[in-house]
Image (cartoon, rainbow, N blue to C red; front, side):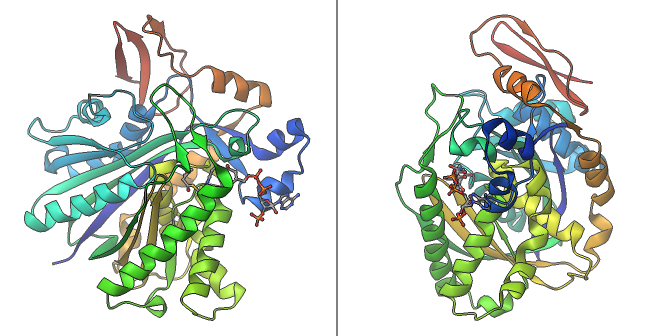
Length: 388
Ligand code: CAA
């Protein structure tokens, strides 16, 4: 019996800022963003959107397809937590109408936690093969204005149904891990934007990749040549290119630049126009690979490198299942991205400053999202989520 990803669906806001617009206002060469960091647009959450509404919007097509009653556990990965105590997934559980004997939990370790959720979900399904676990990763990446991180913001959520004999990707049990206590990127409880030591964070990412790969090689019979494609955590697309170049060097794989590019370029397509979605980004990258590769990927092995600042890195592997195309949500994803609305720099600043208040007051939010669920307001310290 294999265990893995049976279905995958993502959601992002209907608003985006073109990084050419940001570059123009800053007096920066747009190629720094388009080429230097490999990003073209970044998603900006609407005033009535947060990680809960994005998560519910990502997951709705999966529970409609699979039946609400089949989900035994919902794992919600995020580093944009809205409450120190209550799991964000509990709101999603209600919005999706999941059964009341479904377990719900929130997971955190920066951008890595969706991978922890995926691995734990696979373990739960292996123990009880007739169960399904819904893994959702949802984040809004926010940095201070006028910092190098500003151009790498974004927002998105991804939902994955984990089951026995999955239709998309079976996940291998062997994993390579690396953990080290470092301060490359973090967000103390009193801040709404992340603090980051940008250059250092990219170095630590690359170090964690090497270490996780070395550990993977100790525990798995697979070598570099067994993989046809690689999905990396995507804070920005260029990071994956740097990571892959390093892995190719480290493994002495001796691939041409074109070969290297072919192994990752389709994973970057959605991210280039959504921006960083932290926990969700690598899995939106996987969706991009499956939905945008013309060649049949059936039976192909994919290598995954998941990274969460602070830091934890994990290298693991999976195999694409024959017939996977029938289980994709390709047209819905393409339609959603095509229907997004470009915003001006002033509108961007307005959305940036319009973030959900944490002042304990009474608030109603303007309608902005085009998703199925919205955050209508906050009253008596309680967020009010409603179908739209
Ligand atoms: N044309 C083409 N390329 C250009 C250019 C131009 N006109 N101007 C600059 N570039 C290139 C530079 O040469 C550089 O390329 P290399 O990295 O290959 O040398 C690239 O564009 C970026 O330029 P800078 O190094 O000058 O960029 P910066 O210092 O302003 O910012 C950054 C880069 C530090 C990554 C910044 O975007 C940042 O802090 N981002 C947030 C942190 C981050 O994402 N870290 C990633 C690892 S941590 C992680 O993965 C967790 C997470 O999700 C945050």
